Length: 392
Image (cartoon, rainbow, N blue to C red; front, side, top):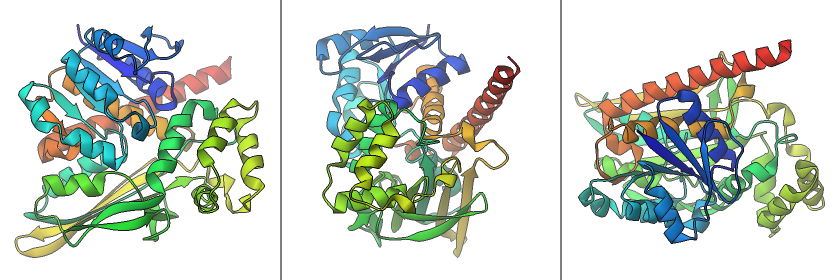
C-alpha cells in the first residue's frame, strides 16, 4: 500500500495538495497532518505539531513520503525534512526560499547514502520552470543562459479567505522583496527584488511587467548546468499593482506581516487589509480586473548547437481555459502531487537531495507531460463540478 503524508494540510496549498492526491487516485492513503483537522474528503487526519519532533517522526513512519507545505518556509527551516529523514522516508516540498533551499541541497550525500529522495521546489516556480529548463537544455550542446518569468495570484483577492493563505503570503513578502541573489556572467550578484530588472513579457496576449524575484532557480540551475553563465527568475502577482503596494508598504517600514495576520482574523479579511494599507498608501494602482488573469510562466534558454547560438522559448499559460479555475494553490499542488506520486510509486529512483532539474532532460520531459495532463484533468473535473452545481 502506497501512502503520502501532507504536512500543513489545513493551509491554502496543503488542502489543494490533499485534494489533488485524492482526485488523482494513484495513492492508497493520504494522511493529512496539521494543528487542526481539515474536514477534507478521502484523507486520514492527524493533529500533529511539527515542533513535536518525536510525534512527527513516529507519524511519518506510517507513510512512504512526506509533502511539506508548511509555510512560511523561512521560519520553519528544515524541521520537516529532518523528521522525514529520521523516519526513513522520501520528502518533497514547494519551497522557493533561497537559504532553505541551500540548506536542503547541502544534505545530498546524506540522503543518497540512506537510499532516500529529497526534491525541493516542486511548485510552478520553482518546479515546472526547472523541468522546462532541463527539457529545453536537450536542444543544445551547451547551455549558456536560462531566464525564467512567472505571473501568478490567489484568484479574487476580494473574496478569498486570507487565513487559508497566510503562510503563503508571508513567504511571498519575505522571499520577493529586499536584497536577493541572481546569477550573471558566472557570478552571484545582488539585486533588489520586485524593483530591479523590470521587463515586459507577453502571456495570453497580455503584456505583463515582471521584476527580479527571490525564487531559488538562479542558485540551483548553475549546480546542474556547469557551463551556465547567467540565470534569472522574474515575476509578478495579480491583480497587477498589488506587488507595488506591498513594496511601498515595506519601504515605508509598515509591519506588513502583522497587517496580514490581523487581516486573517477579521470578518472581512481583504477589506481590513485595504483599510490598514490605505491609511498610508494609494491603493488606486491595484487593477482588480486582472485578478482572474490566470497567469503563466515563460522559460527562455540560450546556448550553442553545432557551434551556433540558439534560443528556445517555452510558455505555459491557461489559454483556452477558464482562468477562474487556476490559482497559486492549484499551480503548486498539481506539480508536487505528480512528482511525489512518482517517487512514492518507485518510478523516480534517483536518490539524494536535489532540485527538479537534476532529474535530467528525459525524465524532466516525462514529468512535464504528466503535470500538463494533471492540469487538464483537474480543469475538466472542476468544470464538470461547477456545471453540475449550477444545475441544482
